[in-house]
Length: 259
Image (cartoon, rainbow, N blue to C red):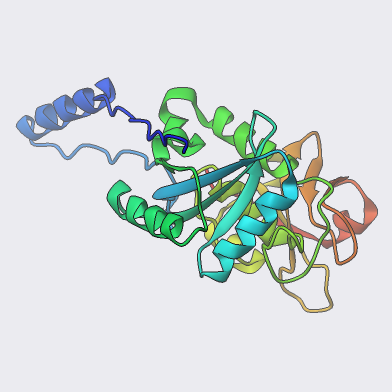
């Protein structure tokens, strides 16, 4: 039997926290209220808690089967291709490592999981934002979305066997990097902060009206140079398109950012 390893993740004191505390003390002594600090994520876009990761599959079908099994149990599971080229599955949003461990061990007893380990936010792009900056986080989110290029579209679900709908793709790319983006394109549009098209950066989202109804019905992720990645429509595959194309230019509603 393989021995499971559960890595420890140190949580060193950030020097900036000490500086902030000093400034608060000085401001209080001077009778002034200090300016509020900028949050790490915009209001309305929570971050992901503790998650469980399982599998290290060379065969994508194995990752698909595990993902579907977990989804059937009501768990928000999603697969991804890691840097080592293997397919892995991540799921859950737990408030503590102990809670995640209990869930993982229960699934292991049921024969659903074999080897697993606990993923904390510090391991994700969201947890490295202060150290490595927004550009790093944006690049990671785009990279995640691009790893799904070629997967077929299918309306309505994030099942990786059936493909992604447009908002499922963007939601998954953000979630795997530590951000809980809403599920539908309209909710994503409402949750983000408006920005001019000319000011977009990679990982910002672009929204379209592609149906006869006068409301947002499609979303893609901007990747730079006037291009975006998206799941176009039923029967097609996830791909990269240009905002300069006549079809999307005429249907563009606006852009939103979340970082």
